[in-house]
Each structure stands twice: as C-alpha cells, then as structure tokens.
Amino acid sequence: MSGVLSDLKVVAFTHYAAGPLTAQFIGALGAEVIKIEAPAQDLNRYAVRDHDGRFGGVSPYFVTLNRNQRTIALDLKSNVGKDIAQRLIENSDLVIENYRPGVLDRLGFGYEQLKTKKPSLIYCSISGYDLLGPSRDAPGQDLIIQALSGITMLTGSSGSNPVPVGTYAIDAYTSMQCVAGILAAVRHRDRTGTGQWVRADMMSSAIHMMAQEASYALNVDPVFTRSSSGVAHVHQAAPYAIYKTVDGAIAISITPADKVGVMAKKFGVFDKISEFISDRGLLEHRDEIVAALATSIGSYSTEEALAIVSEAGAICAPVRTLAQALADPAIVASGLVRDTESAYAGRYRVAAEPLHLSETPLEFGRPAPAFGEQSREILLELGFDLAAIEKLIDSGIVLES
Image 1 (cartoon, helix red, strand yellow):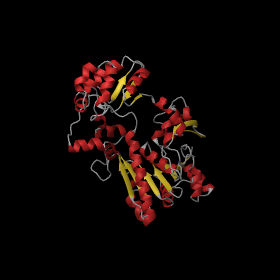
Image 2: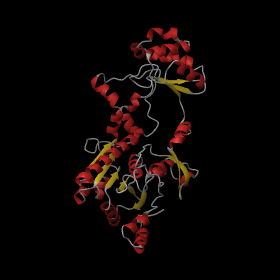
Image 3: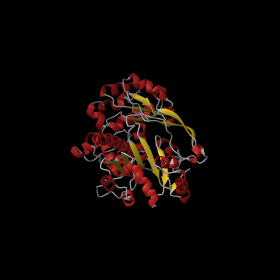
Image 4: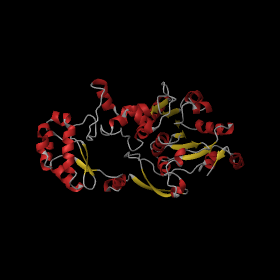
C-alpha cells in the first residue's frame, strides 16, 4: 500500500456493514488492515447470497464491503487467541470495532483496557446507539433505526404505510462519520502522540442525516404531514414528485411557479390548477397539483413526458433501476465500477469508493479475503514459526480457509 495512510496499521473487529465499510475505506486510503474474524465468521459472508454458487457461495455483500483487508480467524475465547490479538493490537495504530456493547470489554479489548497499555492507540467504536447513553444495549439495525429515528415516517404518501429506504443508508452514513473521526484522530495523534476514542452510533447519525428536517421540527412545527399524492419531501411544494408514465416513471424536481404554469399548459391541466399557481399555492395545494399533473403525464411515454417537462424549463429525469444507473456511460467513465478477482470468489464487479485525491489516490488492490485466508501469513509476521502455526491450526485456536 502506498496511500496517504500507508504507515497506519489497523486491527478490525468488524462484521455486518458499518464496521467493514469503515475499515475498507481506511484501507483504500492506504492503511494496512487486519480483520480478526471469529470461528462463527462474519454473518454477512452468507447472509444475502446466490445459493447457486456464485462467488463460491459467499455473499456479494461481503466481497464488496471487505476489500483492502487481510484476515486472521481466531478463537478469542482461548487465552492463546487473546494473546495473538493483543500482539496484533500492540503493533497497530488503530482498532475499529462494531460488536455488541460489552463484547470486547469482556474479552479484554475494550477502549479503557487498551488505552492504559497503549496511550497512542486510536479506538473507533460503531454502535446502534450512543455507548454512553441509556439505550446502548438496545438492538440496533438499519431498518430498526430508520423506524425509530423518524426516517420511515417521512417517506411515502399519507395514504400508505411509512416507507423504509431501499438501501442500508444509515450504516453507510455512520461509517463515513467514523472515517472522518479517524482521520481527525490520526492528525491529533501525530501532533501530540496521544490516541483517543472515536465513536459514532447509527441513531445519532440518522438524526444528523435529517438535520434540515430536525431543525424545522425543533423550531417551527414538530408535526410533519406527508402528501397524499406522493410529493417526495414533507417540506417541498408541488410538483416535486415521481410520476408514472406509460412505460416507466419520471422525477420532477423543485420548479418555480411560473414554470409550473407553463408545464400545466403543455399537459393540458392549467384550467384545473391555475388558481393554485403561486409560491404559497404550490405548497398548500400540492396534492391537487400533483394529482392533476399525474393524470396527464400517465398517458405519455417516459421520453415524451421528459421532453415536455424540459421544454417547460423544469428539472427532470427518468426513474432508473440500479442496473440502468450502473450502466450509465458517465458512471462507467468515472471508474466507480471496478473488476476484481479472488481465488475463492472468482471474477466479480464492485462499486468502489467515490472519493478522489489528486496526490494520494485511493487503493484498490486487495479483494475481500476468504475466511482465515491470511491466518498463516499474519502469524509468521508476528514471529510464530511454522511448527507453532500448525499446532495453533490443529487446536482450532487459529482457523484458515
């Protein structure tokens, strides 16, 4: 590795999504990351997979969230396994973990326990809720946090159930908080020699994702009303919504009142909504406006509807599938979609990190590891001889693929 963090050594006690994504991004910046995996394995290896055997039976979720890392499989319930993990930490600058609160403390690898042995250590904890708060032990998962934070209640139409986001948005957002925190902590350590505890939780991150809406609720009106016609944001006026067409759907973004009038004329519904076409009217009568436009737009093809909306001066786009977005020439040209290959998963494609650094570009050299793939390699680096390694593997304290 030759990236900007190439001198940083990392131990990752991570599984599922937010932890591995954080470790992967730090690895893409050049850090040497060693993932310590329990005998039960990261459940994300097999949680969402193609049972016909693609990727060697491993989940595509795992192979795309665990790049830029090596792995050693250890039984941390054994004293020898703990000693090996401790040796790895002693040789590292950063620990990343997203296990349930208290798990690593019981094993002897909590922040308070490690900082006394190594004051320069940076320790990053990712959790469902604030580890110093009253809900720290409550179960936290992306959908649950979406529900509890209010995100799902903001999404969908008033006549339907609240709608969750169709991706693990909170996991991803939380991991980026951690990446920012780690970079700040590295800068602080380089200046002072002292490490610190970096922590981010999914609930707090979810609230921060809605900083605009939270400010409105805190200062203006705590009650949000979703539109019945599908306006895509509780505080936006018509025609901000998704509209079905004969062969798909289009999105129409924020549009000034005068252009809404032009659009309404082109779609033949001006007489139905003319009295509402003002800045205030677009908000107060958003459902009537969207409903009228939707009735007309539904009789056009996507291409025809987009042409009409564009001619009216409004910003619009087709609603695409993820596969269509990935095939977009602009996405392809950006290099975001990358080909990779590993001995156990074969050839596959992933969406790489979107960050660009002109002088220290992100690394993309190591595919996600097989379970215990580098166990022997890492033990050799720690000074174990071949006979000792064979004994550890035979005993089940260290595992390999």
